[in-house]
Length: 97
Ligand SMILES: [Mg+2]
Image 1 (cartoon, rainbow, N blue to C red):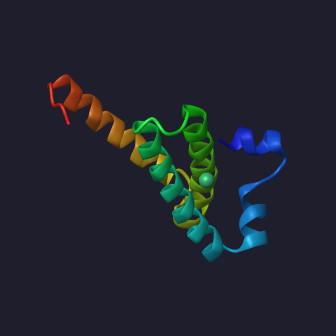
Image 2: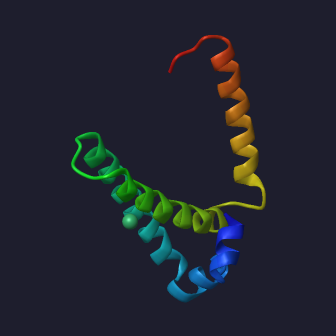
């Protein structure tokens, strides 16, 4: 994700410094709701997948900011690895949910 920010020529810190941490937390909540809504709309055949892709992009951009706001370096990556290892074990054991 950092590479995408680099390509766009903007940093997470710049965004948070400009708009403020609380505002960006509120914006993240808003974007997650928009993604949820778009996925439901897509399920019902009311919108194209590209609209969902745009909402996913909004959420990814916000999540990169939330990682900076809420976590220490590498904390989310560590959680991801642990959760993926646990998921892999469940899949291996035939767990379906
Ligand atoms: Mg959005």
